[in-house]
Length: 371
Image 1: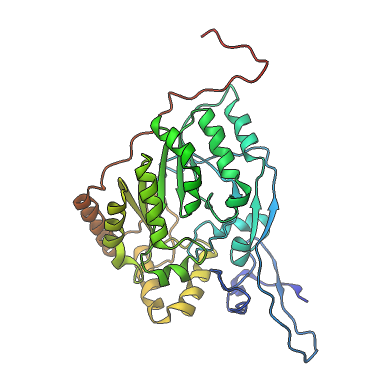
Image 2: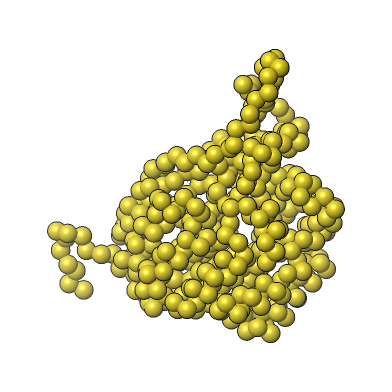
């Protein structure tokens, strides 16, 4: 039985790792409280000298019924201004995920809670349709998958992403999708129709081609070759697909940039992008614990490179610097990427999404417009 006690933020470390058998198949090694919490739950021996079986940590899903779904952003370094999220948290368990700290707003941990305590929004499509139907709504591309993956495993049963796509299709609304999940191919019927109208772009994230690194770093994400199959399937269906070499982990995956781009090009990707590893807030200690456990010989080099690109810090949140870093090393990575995409013909921008086709379908009983 745990007990709650006050722990000053500067003393909240991730040294108290959860038993590896209990977290098998997960990315994070601990479940320390988020930066907004003043207390943490600490395990305490019950005094009985009886061995206890360690319980496997299972995924839990709760439902949320938001009054609004579209989030608006003013970040000048992003290629979109609005997003939607069918889910909170992500079972993929990518240790580097910059969205992990958002679970702190729910009073949950950025560690194992983020990948095991998920929140689904079953009426997301209904809320989205209501927002798109407002007279004041002005159309612009909506991005999905920028925070948590809409095609994580629970989408197979919940189909919330598909229901949102159905709403976007009937409204002829442009959408940008980012995912690592093969589940997107189940929605190929909708995506093909939207692609013919110039209403969809897809980005597939491939961090590494090494199956061992991928298994450790992205424990519940489809294998790299499966993601390349997704690129191939989308391209054959006429859906514009971009490969995202994201994130580039210095000292661990950086050597694979050209190989990832070449494989994606062969699979049919039409463009490419890259982002450097980002470690905001709680992600930094989580990632460093992961490095110490899985790649101790490389840990110092990885962190040294990151600090070099962020003025001695582990992360810099400043716009236009947070995703690429600065300095000679960051410039070298950028130059390698530019040369590779130019050689492969992946330096073309994806076709601009159309906003002029947007419409609000007439509901039963409503009068048709004369204009």
